[in-house]
Image (cartoon, rainbow, N blue to C red; front, side, top):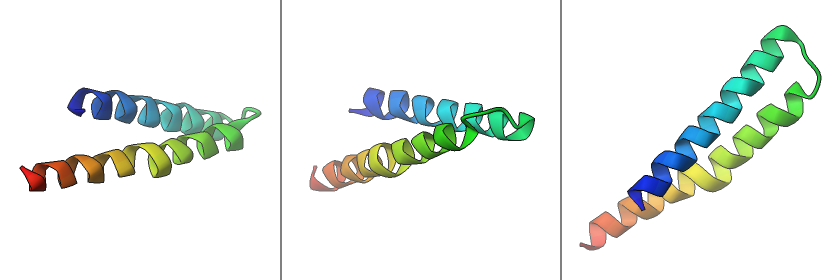
Length: 59
């Protein structure tokens, strides 16, 4: 579970970093890339983090 959290975190912040680069250089599709990055953050990384903390409290 911890490995998947790190992989998901890397993918999320990589996508957000690419989106920030596109935003800075004003390239096309920058809004879509940033939106996808925030989707990964809100529906992938944060729930995985809280689920991992919940599992640690049960043990």
